[in-house]
Image 1 (cartoon, one colour):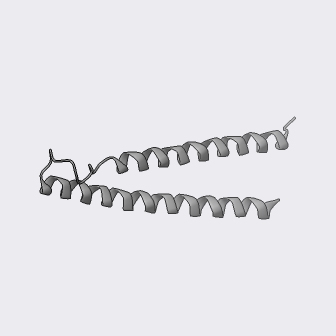
Image 2 (tube, one colour):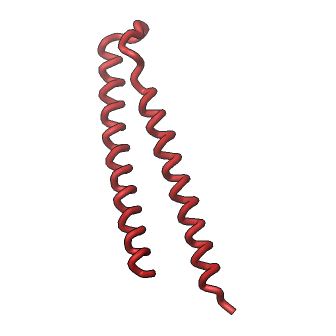
Image 3 (cartoon, one colour):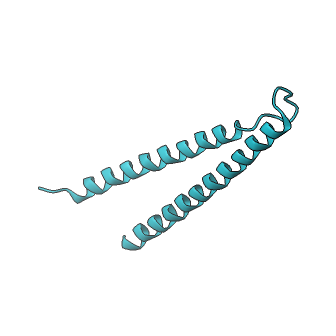
Length: 86
């Protein structure tokens, strides 16, 4: 006999785990992006190299932010749709 309650709980756990994993990946990515540009006081790089690294960091941060916003928005819509079904 199929137990829908158990299947729904299992699905909810899987969704929660996936959400936690994705959130963790966003945090790791933010740390990596933060480490792309060295402090301006680091003298081993030329001004041009520091500028390029900063521009790459800013571009990646912007893309990561966009992905994060999209994920949170999708997550909110999904959560709201599940609440309306119950």
